[in-house]
Image (cartoon, rainbow, N blue to C red; front, side):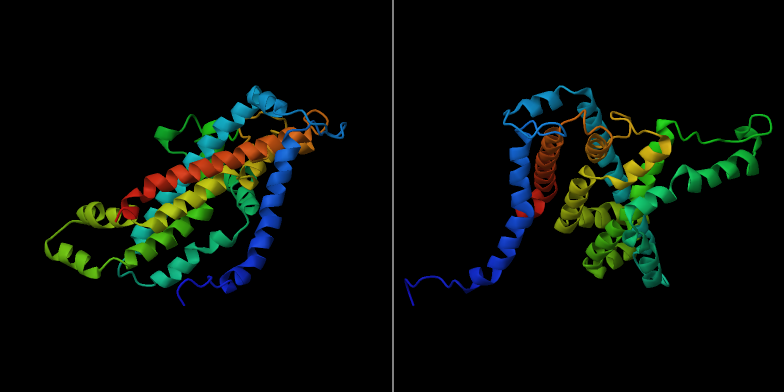
Length: 306
């Protein structure tokens, strides 16, 4: 009937979900906003001090150190995941015997806890075996000095950052592979068959068929956005390496924002007010939201205009 009130049934069905989302998400955020404007600590009950915590944090070198580490971590790990996923995709796309088995096999790391992977790639596991192999077992003349070979010094940033990035790509690269394989399977096979008939090389097909199909897909854009947001709050792998390297103090070269907040809360609860930790968490939330919005705008502007 024209002019009748819209049905309230859809709202009734989604109302419980909205209530749960508000309780689970909105209330903690609102309480964190309030908490960040107080001087709550292990010694103080918490009095309103306005934006003083934010001013203190923005003037703290440890905060900016963690900002640099986090930005590097996010950029390096997401890029490594994307490239590793693309590599796996190119290996398994097309008529490959047993590809279903290999897809399932290489997807296993997704189910492994990040803290376990952080330990797996730690100095006492993979690096220890690699050092044994290259230092004693593969003493090739151009790579040796005397009777010894290559040694990976875990205390060097280029070594532990490489292992951290590799461990993160080991977990999430297969997920990118699954997304990219799904995208390519939606591309008409006739396009690749026509390219084969025209004598196109594999590089030509990758440049003009495979890569444009992946870049123009909204699914890959959303996947990259989700991984960027998730990487901003990464904790397990960096913390595992802070343990192996003995970096328990605040302000080390491996402190992401999450690791910094954990250290402030556990190791220095009397030195850093709890309200400052809440302020850092809120700033991290804002950075994650802004980053996700920018990335979605950049990666989806083509297909949104179609």
